Length: 166
Image 1 (cartoon, rainbow, N blue to C red):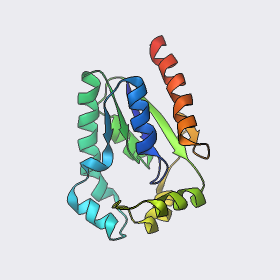
Image 2: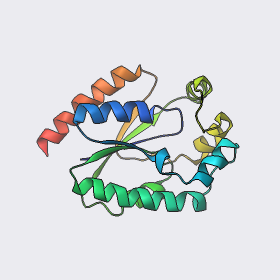
Image 3: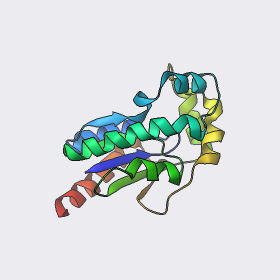
């Protein structure tokens, strides 16, 4: 099973993704760990990434997703803001990817971002991500206004039931 937890920064991708990976007994990966240093520096400086910045990163993630699929699956936390990005991510996988799309209000997201310390993402970039984000018509749309533990428990139950029927 390949599961991609996507959404803008501050939506809880890493927290929810890592908890789901543990519950599903799958390895967890954070797409941020695959960014080249130049991308990280741009975001730290408050400069939004463009499609050219993201493309090599997305290609690397696509290769990794295919490799993880062959090894039995994984959970990836990745913004995957545009449909074209999601198409690149899934391009090398043989099976279906399960998409969990985390969505919440700008106010909640900004509050979460401002509460972070030591993270490379500058909260001034939130509006850029929100304007770029293309909500898919597929996958699980997850309202992040509930406590993260409740979200994770509900999703774990649903995904475990789904994986047993595959």
